[in-house]
Length: 150
Image 1: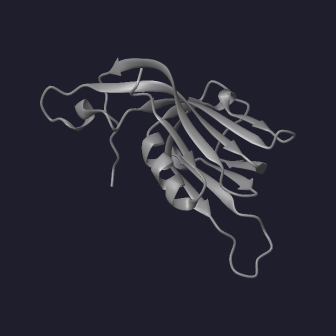
Image 2 (image 1 turned 30 degrees about the vertical axis):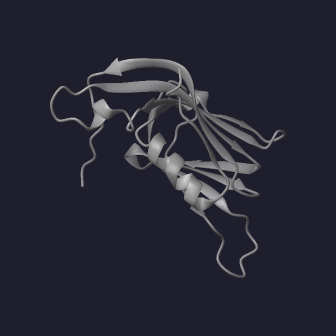
């Protein structure tokens, strides 16, 4: 399939493109995989395909989700807030991935902040930005288009 997404981020601008494509992806808490030894964070996602022409139509709409993986390297640690790690079947809806630089003079490392629906959050402390979003090939139609209250 030539329409499979393969994106890489090495700076904040690249990361914003990955964030836009991963917006409204869903994943199970138990599928989040952080390896401190490998300095790697993997998030298997069911990504809403916002770039599909059918996702932008008002008439003859067609929506699609794809199995994807968000792969972050050079991760030093991961902290969560509002995520029950004892409920591995709980589903999270990814809203945004943002790069946060330390304040000038602050000796802490930069981080990536993953914001999920319902106020849940995950922070990955990183050495530097090195992220990939890759579609794995499996795709399926869905009737629902994500909506956001303002």
